[in-house]
Length: 190
Image 1 (spheres, rainbow, N blue to C red):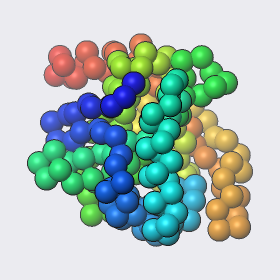
Image 2 (cartoon, rainbow, N blue to C red):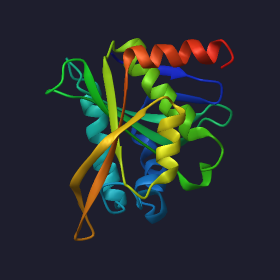
Image 3 (cartoon, helix red, strand yellow):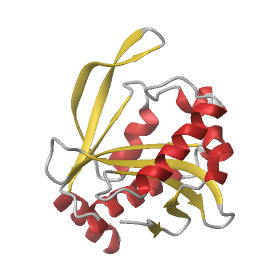
Image 4 (cartoon, one colour):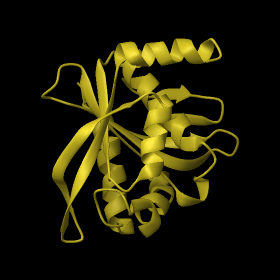
């Protein structure tokens, strides 16, 4: 599916463009934003390669990865980065990743961004299961995924090597029927 164009009341998902490098760097280059991610802060050159690769992958058929800009609709600014990667080992499954620039934290954008990614995965791509992993110390991410309807499933022990230290990852997932139930519940005011 190309191009991706999905929006909520305040945010929108769109394909990345070469002009997004500095905005993505504000996330991937930030020690604060990458504290709980699986990698150290990236340089501008590294972010440029990530954006270029994401743009190239977007044109592949079949498309196996959706690396998307998360845009604040009121300002058209890139405030986050979301990713769905189809899992070749799981039928109709994908892994999700997401990050917001630090100055956008605390505004409820995380839950809105995750809901956009889940809606895209289930409604547009017809996925059955989407999962994501977080650092055990990232309570904000735990609250975000729970608020979006994802269920904590367990721990992958010593899953990430960061700063020379092995770290566990906590897995959260949601199934298509659970997603559709949360959508119906929200529409009913629940």
